[in-house]
Length: 312
Image: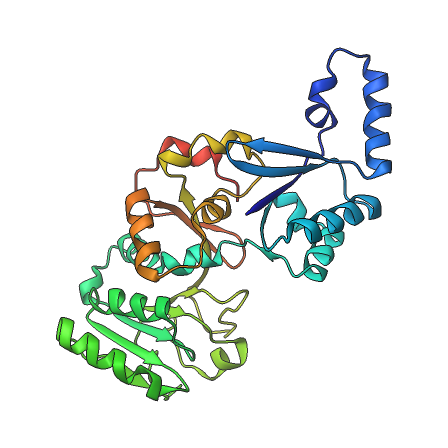
């Protein structure tokens, strides 16, 4: 995992030149930007590239370094995500920029718990709808975990055959019937909570939803657009940084806390291994974010003091 940060504060970027006149610091800083120079810092055992600006020369040097080091997964500071030139560079290099959605997917059952507690409605009394066309290992395990907690679990899909084995497993383990259907009009109409794994907007337009339902959207930027819908689109969350990573928060100031945590635990391995690590870390959800970046808080939750260190 490579970390890249845009340090727009000249004094911070030039901190090692404190013993020379400020006028000289300004000249040196401008020269570094003009020549495309950047800093490579070691933070514990992690490498962080610190950019003074984003220009053609800096991006060219980054491209050379990316090709030499064979970069793949990259975690960037928040201000770089809004930089068009850098994001075009990342797309051209086929870099996987961490966005938190992998972690969001792996913690979705905790999001379901959070919403139920916030609404003060026990999960055991709830009807939940799962929207999913393509089943994978993580989604299958998440459906198992959610179905074990709720009263009724419905699955809406175009590919009902792939859910046959999962239906049998859930019935054998929990004695619960998983309702798998291709009926867009009926499956989700009574569900107070919807988990959207991969439905696109065109799919959502066909569905009939309860007017006050909450939708947890694991697919990027997909939300319910119906005019008469009064619910909330939950697009992301903030996670309290586990204690074993707390020391990194100051060094990685300017990075989204949840995405930073994702970068620490992201790996290609079995769901069981990922689940084990998340349980050991005891990662807690601080609050949710809707599709308009508005915070959704659980009034019943006592927030830790680290909340002020999380960037939204």
